[in-house]
Length: 273
Image 1 (cartoon, rainbow, N blue to C red):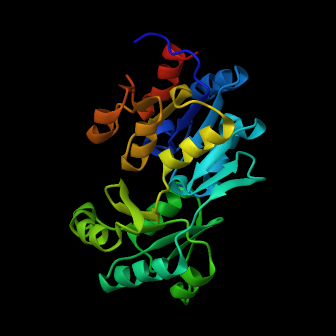
Image 2: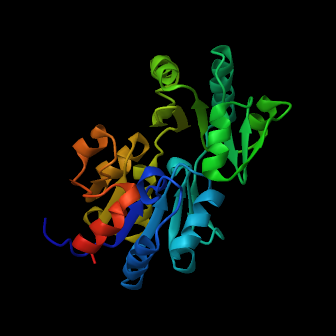
């Protein structure tokens, strides 16, 4: 593959993509990203994580000191990288959120809602502990979960369970809510529900349009199904070597190295810098 010229936006998923398995970013990767920023390339983080969690990695790569953005909660929020301004946001309506929650409860499943630095959960599970570890957010079990859904912005709902359970219940969730919300598995053990017509790709496209940047000048890196719309939209959608086959199948290219081997940095240094 030849050098790719005129790339103006690079959007990167975090977990299993930019981040190593220990949730860190190497100095080498930081140096490559900062070299691109110095050239004027808009370097975006696009994650299912909440703004505060994504912002900590924007600080790590230095994009919070530039005119850049973070795409959070799988594309339902876009903020400036310094978190001083929310550019776009969309939420599930309270009535729909409550209907989804009631069905979750009827199936004896759990539910996670992300707000600021807090994950509101129905009950403690191994998955809530794993989520808290990944995001560095605190866990709260509210007395009245329905009241939280009625009164707080619901950017997304996440259903955690063993992969075989997620695979078994997902079809019925799609049947009930698929025409009113977007559903996908960000991990085999996480089924996520976000507002209709939202996602990483949809909001990346909207941001590029606002900035007057052509699709062909956009590059995106991802590994999982919550990255699908972003990989499809970008002029250059790049799948990680460690990514799902379904993502590799739709990608423009696949990195030569995994997330643990600085896959993004090696690709960018070889084909973009």
